[in-house]
Length: 531
Image (cartoon, rainbow, N blue to C red; front, side, top):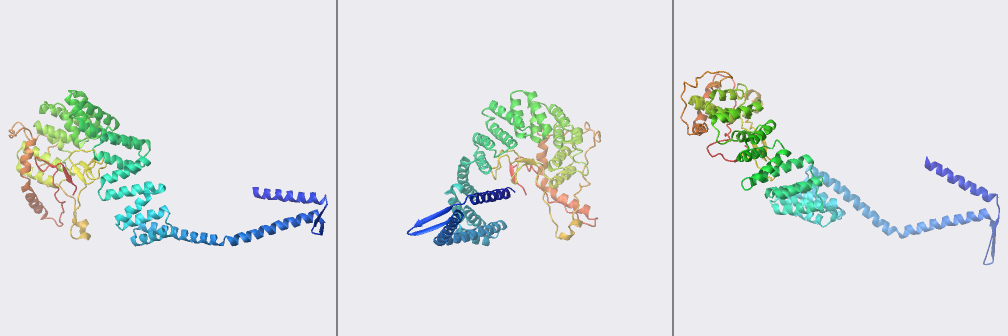
């Protein structure tokens, strides 16, 4: 609309000018070399205008003629550029699809047509990585480092290649260079993991602060990483600087109240100082977030000189804080077993081993200890141990496929910070030979009917006073040693009893393969890999 108005304004101005000239006629006389030319003003202006137009057209033609070579060169460059970008498009799509041959071909074509284009270097590096040509990939990334616009990309590529060949020092060198140029998330994470792997906890904390200021991580992640690093420092200093270790553990708990290692450490350090009430309160608060065996052990051991009855009372208080917790019931049953209160131990374990439930290996072994300590019934003990060999594994600290009995701030495989999580290991599914018949051949595992059921709450089917206690070496934990010594004979008996129970059925029952218990002996191995 504005253009139309401007056009009409210009047209009106021209019309007004011509009308003004027409109202004021005049003559133009030109005398040159004996020639005399007379004409009106309007005709003279028209001749001048036409002459200017003709000169402009002639100049344009001459300029085009002289520029023909450069225009041809520009056309050739445009064709090469179009071919190069087409090759880049094909190569990137081929690399994304995993077509190695097409990716390398397109990379070579793009590099031929667009040698200075950064994307051609990237495509060449990706094609080399797809074809497992590490030398060519590193050469491409090194060339990227010579250009300011691709320097960070080259550093990241060299960092990845160094990690693939296991050269962690070189990987850290490239990540540090990139981190100094721009605190990118990948560089900050790599530098943090290097410091954590080297146990340079203070440098790791400084890196967390740098990443947070650069917005490479969010505030919640930074708080979690700070808590983990402070816990690692506290664990390292607990013997030499207990006061500083306690301050660090408390700071970590304030950041992450559910961080079990920090809570357990703080409780132990407070107990050493004689602050029993504070040591208990800190565990009780954390128990609401995450019931854990380490917290139960720290709570029951807050006074090492307590009797078994006192420890049982503390276990009861801990159980009442979160009565729906399996760990609370196990801790109560263990304390009751040590105090030889078998009724309380069975009542605590009853909901965990009731029909329809899937007790873990630790629960089954604890029931075997109760049977051994109370009745000495070797048959019931063998049944519980056989059931423990088939039971699901207990929760443990797991990181990158590694199961550990103790928490660690980093993964022993990847070096990732805060990689361990408390959960149950994945169960293994065993397939039968005929796959189409799987729905008919696999049935739910049932508890053996011959097992001795635990006493219900409030029941007193056995007179504890009438049965003399068995001799133990110190507490009920020594009975586990004797029970596990008989575990080698239980597998054959359990299999035979299982075959006899299945002989009357029309369909076979497939039980999972036995899983080794978490505690195979008196010296359990600290770390084992997931099957």
